[in-house]
Length: 637
Image 1: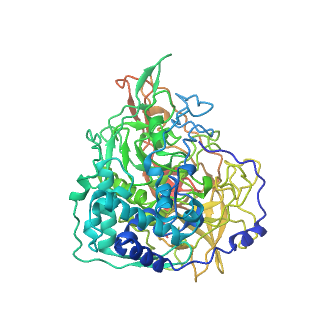
Image 2: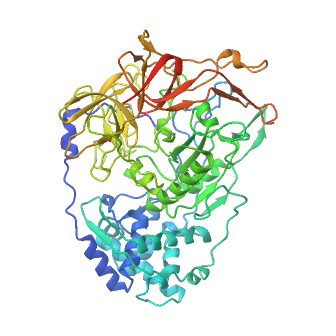
């Protein structure tokens, strides 16, 4: 799925210069909304609400969203859309079980896609306003006028009045979503009206302070929605909260030649295994091609849910009782639910929409409550937090959703904000930079010029260095780079810590904090005036007395004695990292010693092997890993 960038590492001394690149002088975003609303007779609250669901009022420096939308009003340009999908790229076997390895295709299947009308709104906005596509992309005020013109046009086409009453605009707001499904359009409109009712104030990515004042006693005239003639998708017992738009589009499951089958495994979770993780992915592609891939049983990969960017519509494709081939680690796959989000980790510096964040957060909270998954970053994990199973698989593990996923906002939407716990001298911290202002240096956002610096973008990660100074080398990851250095590539997380992750403090020096990370002290800039981490007291592990080093594992498999006759023993193989005496790592909780034996199309022989070995899950690097409980001592700090 991911491409390896054979690019020389940029010198750390150049980074402050790249970060300091001046952004375009901001215009008065609030005034632009007011003027556009007056010009096109759209209630300002409606215009602000619609914009918030698309972009949270950000301009994104003229870069497209993950479904080709531009600017505060998320005007879509078909020219920025491709039918591409990068699921074929990279070395990771998505099933992650060497007892049934999958042959990865050389390239993704061709999936020609007719451009949907929802990806052509910029054309209509240009016709209505007389502005060029380039102006609508790069001038926030023009973009806002384009969105207002579209809303007014949708209102007229419905035969609805250009009223001062926001409730009269419910149908036009629903149509603005671009959804062809009734529930998706309704979800988008309901979320817009929820924002209008509650109000919101925030500072945009280019420094604009924008306020949507709450509108009390807001009514919604939902009858206008009925006039849109939208379809009712199949629900077929989908496992989704009723408040979101969700349909059933089943993934392919079929017997294939040579005793093969694809492309997930039948199971009976949670009756046979508890679900402990929800794994967040991005598709590295667009909605429709990715959904079709999941319907092809010959394709070696699958996931439970697909989330669309423009309106947050969800397709459930595998029942949660069954095991998707999604995370490259069979132990994690057998105990997790995978959710793919339309978009790219970095291509074109694209961004994730508020509509997608909101519907995904509602889904994750629902699934977490249903299966008892803790709402923390040790259990709601990115694909980039999943460990390799063996030393040979560490290097090829995936990196999505990447540094531009806003974990702090995501957890706020789940109703589980990432708060500090403890005082300034706590022995553990949680990574928590301010997403809007944290813009670390990266390269690799442009496929055509992979060595070029990315534009300064809000990010959820911090760089980790060998010493407490800005020009110190990055710490090394011997699994990812056995003989080389970590890279500043957007696709290389070897020397990065991410929002919500908890680490044990190793040292402090002025504005710098060191954490234990992959067997070494890793320093990051953490000034008191603008902290990038917060106290987070909790349990930590250290080697028990008498042990110089402790093995670290990528899976918590049972001991050999637990395997019944006929099921081959799965070796408990340590990874290549060293956990030495004196080091400490945060403890996330116990990990059950289990192996799900499932290598046949017929589920009858499928068996869960359970062992007596006790494991702990720890935050060892960017990825979670496991240690045996008998090897470590647990303390609180």
